[in-house]
Image 1: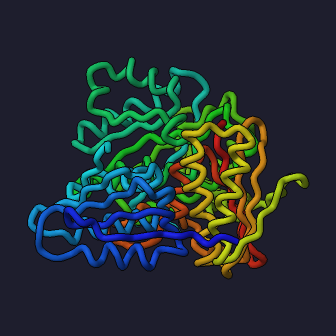
Image 2 (image 1 turned 180 degrees about the vertical axis):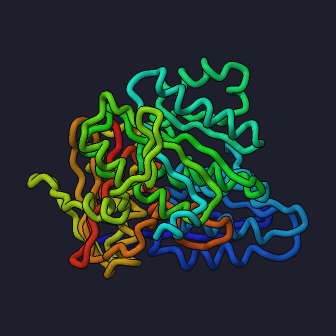
Length: 104
Length: 310
């Protein structure tokens, strides 16, 4: 049996997190903790997700909540967005301006 | 009982029609009356009937929110959140919202029909107390008598031959229960048991089965998300474990999860969430992604299956 793994590392060149693995029930707590730590003053926040192969709907909900917590016009910028995350954000948080999904 | 009916603000008539003339006579004045009163007006009907309406409405068609129900409502389980409430909720200040919703047409198959008729019954619960009118046309010339009999049970009022009658057999809860039928899976379908530790393995196994059965790569993303949400729901809400099975049926890939849970909320998975609520979107997402969802639930457990076209 292989439990899902999620690696989370702070970005070195800007505010944010690089993630690799799967965001699901097994890894939800660490995902929410990492997103919860992204509040605070500063610039836009970046999530590097090209190494993420799966995000469930609760994981997407945590992304939307993190974006909503950002203040002062700051945005949560998603890079390498996994398709499942895109589906859930489109379905439940269309037009959430605090999230920017980049094509890269 | 009479008083309770008189006090109900939600209006939900069925309209039996037998030809285009009857269709237009029953629907167009309804739409124009709404427009004249300044009410938000929508029509979610099969493509052919949408064309009839557009041609008859002419310029006024631009004022009606038009949707092809064969696409938007292909899975009847998403019609309440995605079509009806999506439109009604987007006009919170309207005195009344008017919708023509035609979720049942002659092409609906036997596997889809129980989900269709349960949807019709649940509309009454979903909109109770709201200032909304939903008119549901039925192609009475081509649909089975049993379907028309069910329409009498799911609509408090039926319009037939231009005459409006209160339905004496209106009993939506009975319809929901009557179509809550056991679902048998094929003997040969591979089964993968899971609990909280094995939920990732179970999802991966289900996705591999679907890939092997020829589900297109783009659809596998939808499949993985839908299967993952059902498996997660079993672990979180239904005793912590379950069994997932995948097979093909009439050209579609079917994914089924059985667990020990019992749905006591008939509208589970059909309520659009508020933007800020943290949970409760999993089953809703399954409804959005799938071409059909069937559920059998009871004290002995729940079977939820979704169908995806290949």
